Amino acid sequence: MQLRSIYPIADPDFIVFELDTFYDVVIATNTTVGDTRMWLYDYHLTPIMFDDNTGE
Image (cartoon, rainbow, N blue to C red):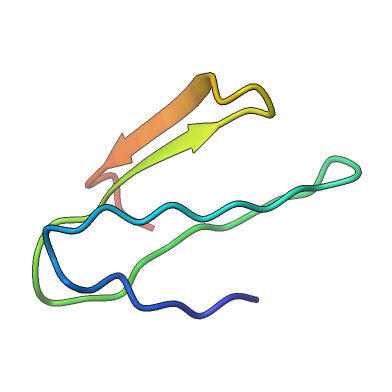
Protein backbone atom coordinates (compact mmCIF):
# COMPACT_ATOMS: atom_id res chain seq x y z
CA MET A 1 0.00 0.00 0.00
CA GLN A 2 1.18 3.49 -0.82
CA LEU A 3 -0.23 6.59 0.86
CA ARG A 4 0.56 9.86 -0.88
CA SER A 5 -0.45 13.49 -0.92
CA ILE A 6 -1.62 14.91 -4.24
CA TYR A 7 -1.54 18.57 -3.22
CA PRO A 8 -1.41 21.31 -4.42
CA ILE A 9 -4.61 20.73 -6.35
CA ALA A 10 -3.59 21.94 -9.83
CA ASP A 11 -0.22 20.15 -9.70
CA PRO A 12 -0.09 16.84 -11.67
CA ASP A 13 1.30 13.82 -9.79
CA PHE A 14 3.03 10.83 -11.33
CA ILE A 15 3.41 7.52 -9.47
CA VAL A 16 5.40 4.57 -10.82
CA PHE A 17 5.05 0.94 -9.78
CA GLU A 18 6.10 -2.31 -11.42
CA LEU A 19 4.53 -5.75 -11.13
CA ASP A 20 6.39 -8.98 -11.86
CA THR A 21 3.19 -10.90 -12.62
CA PHE A 22 -0.53 -10.23 -13.08
CA TYR A 23 -2.29 -8.85 -9.99
CA ASP A 24 -5.57 -7.14 -9.20
CA VAL A 25 -4.63 -3.56 -8.38
CA VAL A 26 -6.85 -0.87 -6.89
CA ILE A 27 -5.88 2.75 -7.44
CA ALA A 28 -8.10 5.19 -5.57
CA THR A 29 -8.27 8.67 -4.12
CA ASN A 30 -10.25 9.93 -1.17
CA THR A 31 -10.97 13.65 -1.16
CA THR A 32 -13.81 16.11 -0.84
CA VAL A 33 -11.93 18.80 -2.78
CA GLY A 34 -11.24 18.82 -6.51
CA ASP A 35 -11.80 16.20 -9.19
CA THR A 36 -9.46 13.25 -9.60
CA ARG A 37 -8.73 11.95 -13.10
CA MET A 38 -6.35 9.00 -13.59
CA TRP A 39 -4.43 7.57 -16.49
CA LEU A 40 -2.72 4.17 -16.44
CA TYR A 41 0.28 3.64 -18.71
CA ASP A 42 2.12 0.48 -19.70
CA TYR A 43 5.88 -0.13 -19.48
CA HIS A 44 6.49 1.92 -22.64
CA LEU A 45 4.41 4.84 -21.27
CA THR A 46 1.58 4.12 -23.70
CA PRO A 47 -1.79 5.04 -22.13
CA ILE A 48 -3.91 1.91 -21.59
CA MET A 49 -6.71 3.21 -19.35
CA PHE A 50 -8.36 6.45 -18.25
CA ASP A 51 -10.90 7.03 -15.49
CA ASP A 52 -12.90 10.05 -14.40
CA ASN A 53 -15.80 9.67 -11.99
CA THR A 54 -16.73 6.01 -12.46
CA GLY A 55 -16.80 5.44 -8.69
CA GLU A 56 -15.18 2.70 -6.68
